[in-house]
Length: 118
Image (tube, rainbow, N blue to C red; front, side, top):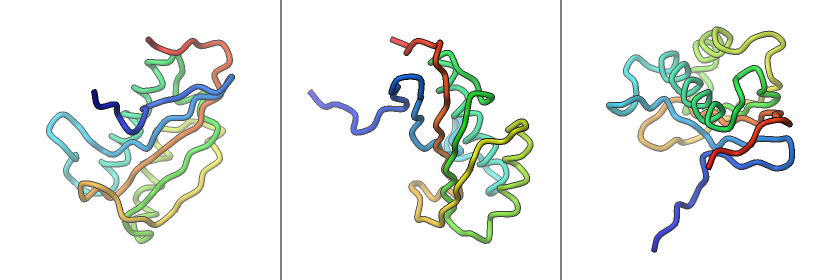
């Protein structure tokens, strides 16, 4: 039996740690570059959080991995559209990414009253 090498989300006390999400839609990476990929990656983060009873409003820290730091301005604009105020603390790192992605986003959410999904 083969087990996955990564969990989409793990709970540690009141914290949810969501693994990096790419801008993958039903047909693969969404087209159009870093802005649409950023929006889709955040929607994917939101879906994982929802499965654990949390929302984007519960995110306290995010890490954004960019294929090129030149994509920062476009990513930042799309990111700001979906995260409210106050925005989570954030780090950004230039990195090689899987599947030719331009962006990957992982988060930590504070969700003390939620239960893990089965």
